[in-house]
Structures are given as structure tokens and as C-alpha cells.
Image 1 (cartoon, rainbow, N blue to C red):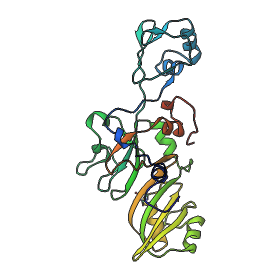
Image 2: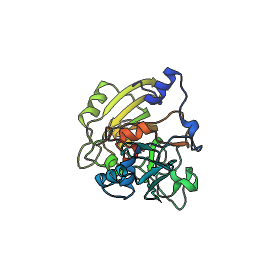
Image 3: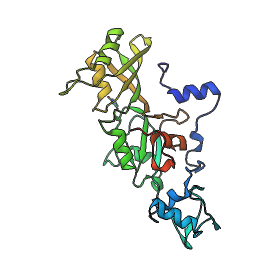
Length: 280
Ligand code: URA
């Protein structure tokens, strides 16, 4: 990845001439992930997977009024009306939003005095959502908002080593020794040194340099403390990626959008309707 504050998605979309997907924000345009009918029914508590398959095969299930006898038929939980034995069956699905966190708000669900990341969403969407992990008040960039606790746990678990890449402007003058020191695991004043991290040095400026730093843990002020351990001072920090998610550069700071089906699949969520490649 080139050392710029634009993540790989932006570099790709610039290359193929497409615009970001942020236009879909707030418009409800995004197609919800379709899932198999048997998975829908089992998820809605209609029985085990084999019990609901049996119900479907017996012909007691309809989708939009039409009898369906194939358990693998795809349904869209946002649109399709599913009935079993003439009774409407609804599925509560988790919600997932990518937010471009701007500087100046806190990564919390509520705060007595300061603007929170949830304040950036309309009240009707906010309920039950929380940020997956924290960015400092002055840090920008990718933040996942969801109501999926198990997914958040997997992404944040220290045992999973989910990678996060940050673009930073740093006062200092780093070179290969610093790249090696990051790779060896820096002492940042905790009981244990930081895990090995990747430092890529980009443009040098009068007062410092632009870098990418990839870490696989999430300690308090981690990047700033790693920089300080090498006599650097972070003056701007932006998260570009977290696990398989990359900040959509079609989003402006403060904007958000739902995750795409592909992103859900990469995260290995239930909502994706396919097992996919899980983050863990
Ligand atoms: N590291 C930091 O120092 N701050 C952040 O907000 C994220 C990572």
C-alpha cells in the first residue's frame, strides 16, 4: 500500500474511475444481504435447520404469498414477507455501519458533555449500536458501529490479533532502524512490549514524515505511544483499515454507510448469509 492517507479502497476506486459508495448513505438504497430460507426460519426461532427444511418441503412456507419448497431459496429479510403456516415470520438481523469518524467526537455511546460517534447518526438508527473499539477524540477514520456483540468481541479480542492500519503524520525523522524497532516489538511502558508492528515510511516533510503503521493489538494510545518510544510525535492520526474492512474514501468525515454484503461476508457475520472468511 502506498503511504497516503487514502486506504486501498480509495486507491482502487481512483484507479478504476468509480466513485465511493457513500452516495447510498441515508437513502436506504443498499440491498440487504439475502439469506437462505431455511437459515432465515431457523434464525427466527422456527426450529432447527432440519426441522425448518422439513416444514419447507411440506409446503407450509410461503414467500411473498408464493409457496416455496426449496430450503436454499434466497430471501431478503428487508423486503420479503415470509410466512409459515399462514403466520408472518420476522427475523431480527444485526446492523453494521461503517463510520468515517471525524476528529473532535468521542468513541462512546453517550457522554454528558461531548459529542459522541453515535450522535452522528439519526436517532432512529442509533438505538442498540455501539462502536467496535475506540479511537482517540483527535483520531479520524474507520470505525465500525454495530449491535453485534459477538462480532465486536471477535474483532477486539487480544487473542485474535486483528490488524489495524493507521496513516500518521509524525514529527521526527525515522529510518530503517525505526522500521526494525517496530518490527521487533517496542517497549511502550507496559508490562509487556508491544507486539511486532509494521512501519512504512512515506513522504518526508520539513517537520516530519508521513507513515503507515500496522498493529495487531489495541492498547490505549497505542500508535502515539509507539511513536513516542522512537522519539516521534503523532500530529495527525487516521485509521484506514481494521481486519478485512477498509475505510470507504467516498465517505466524508462524519458520514456513514451500511456495510456491503461482501464486507459482511469477509467479517464472517451471520447477516451475510454465507460462512465466508471470518475474521477469526
Ligand atoms: N492509537 C492511538 O494512539 N490512538 C488511536 O486513536 C488509535 C490508535
